[in-house]
Length: 315
Ligand SMILES: C[S@@+](CC[C@H](N)C(=O)[O-])C[C@H]1O[C@@H](n2cnc3c(N)ncnc32)[C@H](O)[C@@H]1O
Image (cartoon, rainbow, N blue to C red; front, side):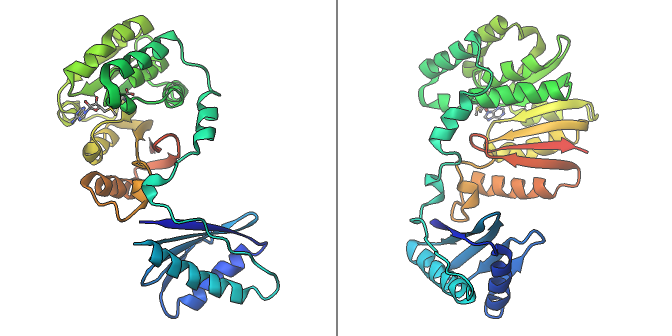
C-alpha cells in the first residue's frame, strides 16, 4: 500500500489538526487522540496528522497511487483553506510501498553500528563464518549493535536466568551469555542441529559455553516444559514469526517482576505498517504488536533498531 508524507512548516499544527478533524468529521470518520494526533479515514484511503515542534506531518496512504493522490488533494485543500493567517506550503513525497521504506536510513544505520563498543575477534569471526557457511540465511544473524544492546540489557537488570528462542549460529547467544554472571544460565532453543553446530566452538572461545544449555526441538515444547514459576529474568525471541504470540505468552507468565522479554523483527521490514501485507506472519505480528502495547502485565517500548525491537518489562 503506497504511502506519501508531507512536512508542513507552521507554528500551529495542533490548531490545524483540530480544525481538519472537526470539519471533515461531518462527512467521514475522524479521530483525535489526547496527544493531538489526528486520523482522517476517507473512502479512498486515510491521512494521519502528527503535530511536531516546527510543523505538521501528514501521512497519506491508500490502496494505489491514485488513491494516495485523492487523499493528498482533499486534505491539502482543506488545510490551505483553514490557513487564513499564513501561507502554507504542502509538498508531498513520491508514494512508496512499505517494503521499500528504510526503517533507518542506511547512512545513519552504518554510523550507529560503528559507534558502539566494537565487536571482539570472536564475534567478528563468527559473523564471517556464518556468511560463508549459510549464504543468504546469514541475514538472520543479529547485527553487532543489536547484540551489544542485548548484552547491555542483560547486565543492566542483573539477569541470571535467560532464555533465547532462535539461536542460529549462536551470535546473539554469546551476546546474552556475556551479560550473565559466571553462574548464570541461558536456555537456548532452536530446531536446527546444522546451524547450531557452528555455534559451539565460538561459545567456547567466548568463554560462555558452560553458561549455555542448547535445546534442539520446537521452542514451544521447550518453553512449556519449564516450571510454571515467575523466575525468568530475561528472554530474547528471534525465531519463526508465526510462533511469536505463543512464545510471548509462555515467557511473560514466567518472567519475574522487572524481567524483560525482547522481541526481534517486530516491524517485518516495515510491512507491519501496511494493511495490504496480509501473509500469515504479517497478520500475527501486527496482532501481537497491538496486544503487547495494551498488555496490562507489562510496560513496553518498540525501537526502530534494525528490523524493530520490542522490549516488554514485566510488572
Ligand atoms: C533469525 S534466526 C536466529 C538468529 C540468532 N538470534 C542470531 O543472532 O544469530 C531464527 C532461528 O530460529 C530457528 N527456529 C525456527 N523455527 C523454530 C522453532 N519452531 N523453534 C525453535 N527454533 C526455531 C531457526 O532454526 C533459526 O536458527
